[in-house]
Image (cartoon, rainbow, N blue to C red):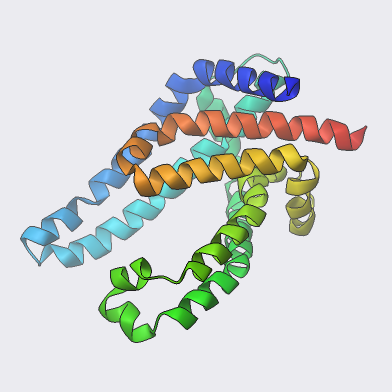
Length: 246
């Protein structure tokens, strides 16, 4: 419990130090993404804008999402300097470090996506067995609202098992870039232990709840929340590595 309190305390201090620079750095990509959705709104007024939405919105969204992801990944560099009691550099320097590793990060994120899809195959199979393709095409909202409880149960079990990997995957990558991806997958569990399991499911449960039930609140807090989540993850992962190396 003392370790958890220490990690939370360090995370609060880190968040206070980095909040302004991180939010300033990522907001420009959020704004680019929002601007990219203007053609979508215009297409409801004038259908001719639908083609523009296809050409502009999708590339703009992908660009802004990925660049925001890289900026957020840079928090690992800053958090590591912070916990190592080194002088905190301007956040732009951490972004430059993240940009240098962008290609390798993209490959690993693809691995995360593939693993997630594989884990969720049973959920998708249960859903497809329960809902017909015709129903999905004609009335998808009804298909989801009338979903068999079995599908939800399978989905929850999968999420609980996978949460530790999804939550700590970028920290595993940050500390083990030269290791193969299978080892990084194992490290997410080995280096974070049972407390890591609890932390991961709390974080994913909270963000999923806010995203689905309170989307306005989530939209407001998701950027500063990244500071808290990434720092907690890195601090706890560092503690786990010390234990496994001891």
